[in-house]
Image (cartoon, rainbow, N blue to C red; front, side, top):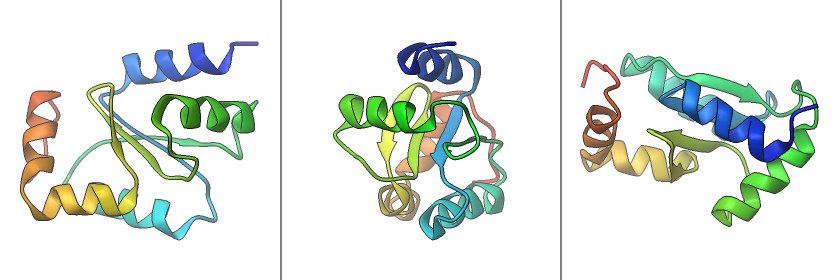
Length: 107
């Protein structure tokens, strides 16, 4: 079995936009809805459906200091949770992050 660290790094290396989430989480649904609305393709990792989801969440907490989901990553960089991502969108910085990660959007 892949370690949580390896799983996270492999996922971030393979996908420019990653949302670590849980299916019941309303904030996760909101941030994924934002990405869909602005035409961004993202990779969703549902921590309840992957093996060792709790270990992955603990590793994300060690990496970011944030224990909650969603955990949003763009271009291998942690950008925060739902409110952080919406704030970046509101102030125009999300577009810049997406462009720097060579992610297309309709912004």
